[in-house]
Image (tube, rainbow, N blue to C red; front, top):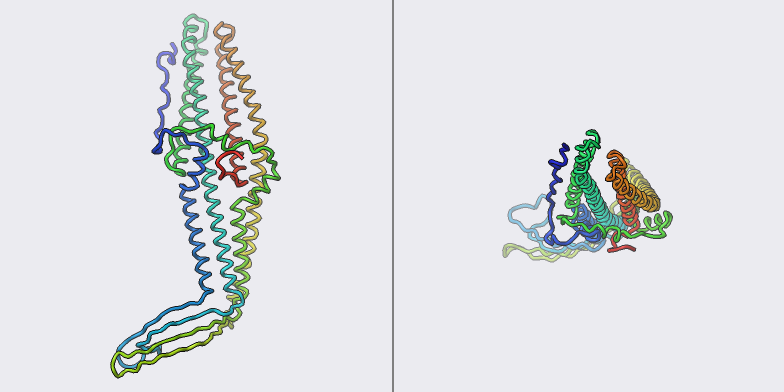
Length: 426
């Protein structure tokens, strides 16, 4: 007797997943993209670093303005202070850099460029988080469909087990053939459990990016969000990506900052001229002390005369950094060009492959249904039936994979061409 008919294998138990407060809502692709850009800690860290870079630029701009400070010194005892400064004096000191051969302006420009690069790094981190979250949502939807396909064929094997048992009892079926349907059923249930485990893993990874993931995933929202992107040839896609990709813009800003730093260091050997003024008031702590007011204005000129070659070394290092940063721009553009060209080519070809796989699936299903009817009439063997159903199942998986790969290619194109922020198809 077939073990399948007497004691069917249990279906895989559902894996618990974190649930959002509004658990009745299905998670859409647009919501996943939006939440990833705000919830992912990598995007938050990049935003904090950008805020720091903006603060550094603000600090550097402040050095070009007059610097004013107040002071007060007092003391008791005999003699003078070790630094020859007077006690019991209060006043104000004002200083202003007058001319430094453009070094201050170059420092400000370099700080602004670094802040700009950090801002683009934040945008890139957000898009990276959105891309990863979107890929995991696609994997979840695909995995759920693959799980359902495995469950459907397992249910089919379970349903037909009784017919196989009757044929075996009547001597119309060999025991080896009868055991084949049990083996196929067990394999289908194992595949179903494995696919469910993959879905649970993708859910956990998505939750690490966006927070709790509801049980319901709106699979139909994925192709609706990605759209068909009609008429987007590789050359146009590359042009759009170069204009929109924040990684390229960050590399360009960083290269600009490195070039400015090199120009500034070449001027470090030139004089620095500044003016300063002091107004002070000496006050006495006893009735015998004299109170006096002082006002003084002067200027300062300083210039390095000899540094043992260290300044030249710093200039050479800065020039090398600038050259490396310039090459980094080329590397970023090359990477984007390759990714866009590959994704555009894959999207175009996978669209055709998907249509062909759908046709193959329909044909395989029609063939399996026909063989199923013939098997019920005793016209074909169980081996032929199992082979037809296995072929239909394999065609179904191939069709799912083709659609999945097409959605991943379109997601890549949407991210690289700056369209991932939109709430729907372009």
